[in-house]
Amino acid sequence: MGYRNYRQLIDRGLVPLRDEADLADVAGGRLATVVAGTRGMCDGVQLRDFPSFIRTTDSGDIMLNFLLREAERLSLPDAVMINSFDDLETTTLDAMRAILPPVHAVGPLLLHERHVIPADSPLAGLGSNLWKEQAGLMEWLAGRAPRSVVYVN
Image 1 (cartoon, rainbow, N blue to C red):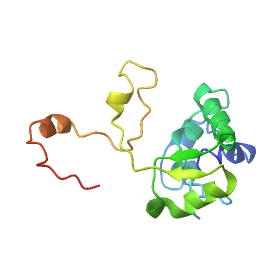
Image 2: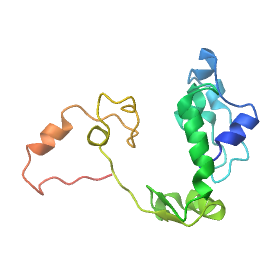
Image 3: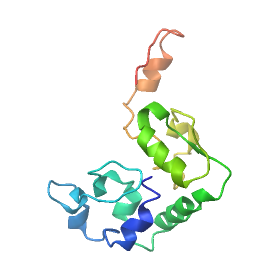
Image 4: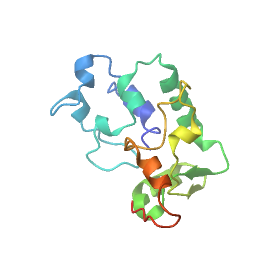
């Protein structure tokens, strides 16, 4: 829903942020601006809560324009699949279902970005993981006996 609200943020003049001071994530800074009237997002959502492309680029940025176009095209397909599940994001998924074709929550699907996007790709910084991977974790896991580790998320 953050992507679906991009156009509204631009039309209201809230983004893009061009000044380095606006991009600083400090208490009381521009990123702390509460954005009212965002469809499918909780009350009190701030600019810092939106995907970073809207905050850190200017209107000529290729990725921003790509995401704007794709978010606006979401109403075209026969269905939309989201990497989430209803118990986690009921309100947002219901809002999406009200404005989009049938929305199916098919997650959580965990993608390990280094296996999906080659490290030398310009898209290497994109991924579905919001956390930095702990160094050595995969090697440690590979050294354990099969089915001997429990992962709790």
